[in-house]
Figure (tube, rainbow, N blue to C red):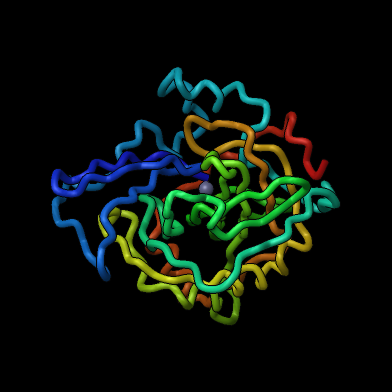
Length: 276
Ligand SMILES: [Zn+2]
């Protein structure tokens, strides 16, 4: 999931940042159309940690202790040997076209839902007695979660918060190249590169195609996990779709071309209560 690209706001553009289970997204003045912040120092990732060295994040900072001694760290390896989830079945309330900003979170394509201060107005899903609200999504490449030993080319994380805005649940959809274009990816504008965090493109997205591609999570794994980047906070319920969202070959090449290595090493299963 996320990481924490620290966004340094340009003097003229005062951004506010909000932590996303893996990155900070800047929400600021609404930009009309596709615009680029030209100050080369305006936006950049300044993480003190790297995905390439995810075994040792606690060595980087004592604040990242949970990455080292946590009991529910993500991601983990999954397989049909775990069975599939029978509990916590999600029911989606993602209706219509959803406005937000398309950008790059420093590691791959991303989108944040337009926020008016009220999380409960966002698209949501319900499981058990919980309702969580879509904050946005981002792509990791390669996938964080392997299934049966196979790692997909990329993984889409739909990050959800509770009514007060705290990260609570992540829907993970694995992406692989297939024979046909993905209708979900087709509606996206041109990809923005990982080294271009200053570009924000307001768009509207319909999530129907994404949910249909994984049969609305009718088959999935669920477990108690964490953010997949420092500080590795726990208390996140993960839902990993069994179905894969297939994209066209060129679509996958565009996604990968806009991305950089962003998968945390898989963690040992401990108190994750897979499918419980
Ligand atoms: Zn993520």
